[in-house]
Image (cartoon, rainbow over all chains, first blue to last red; front, side, top):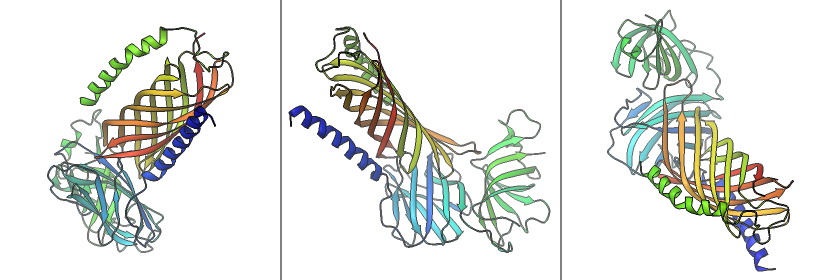
Length: 248
Length: 186
């Protein structure tokens, strides 16, 4: 074998090895659990200081300046994965029922997301934003989960945790700039629903621009909310909104 | 922004070499080059796939090379990949430059290259007014092989390992591309 052929063969082998190494490098690290629930997640970065925690499922904790990769651990298990450079992560083998994802960076807890009522074999998709040292739940979807036969376990009639939902009603209480309580129209809800709108787009009926539309969100305003039902118990429900239309 | 300044420095460093390579000896083929094949610059346009983090992304790749000396060529590499993961839309634009070594054969043209540059990633959530973008360092190692199908045209398959920084860590993401090459020159 001539030197040139030797170099050529080594180069081709090297490229193949590099590609093979890359295929395996982005797999989640850490041991898996024994359950059958799979979680796919995406972490978005954001400007510092504008974060508002999603109520009930996103528990914000103040964190100082942290650096290094973001680690997601599952409480009560030994499962831990590193969020990749483009913000994606995947966890397999989670137990059914309820589990909590804890996001840390440089040993500092950024926040956590608790997912409830997950059936065996379900696929959970979660999108969070890490901003200002907190974790905001942006979107939660649970797929491969049958609707419960009885809806009495959920405050909102017909609501299923992890699924999309459309609600109409009046704003009952403004909690802060990014969340409010809503009195749902008709007999669909037995109480006020919490709406987290930190990542929602606001539109106002009859207005061409939505720049100052958010300012019209006042107690008594009629709203149409579209988003995901993230938690629901007989006494409380939380919707993470992707869109809020203010009708009056 | 530091990465933009670094890009400018890299470009200014490469420009004299690129200019020299383009006009030094027009029409003169390097040793081992097939006489029917133009030895000048070439462009590569391709379908491209990458596995970025946990997401499978599809997109395009555009590459241009200029001869420098013997089998060495300067290279500029631009690629865009798009897809969705966990309900979020992801896009990734890589802009890299570096050097390539081409092994000359009669019909097959294997090569290896090393690239340095950056990556711009954007993540958005459909239906929500929320997106985030960041620009960071990146690089690539890899190679491929071209098969000449006409005097100026070739088909090329390429495999790279993209080394991209983001969210406090380095990722090693494979990228595979398949496309056509057009060669300039007399």
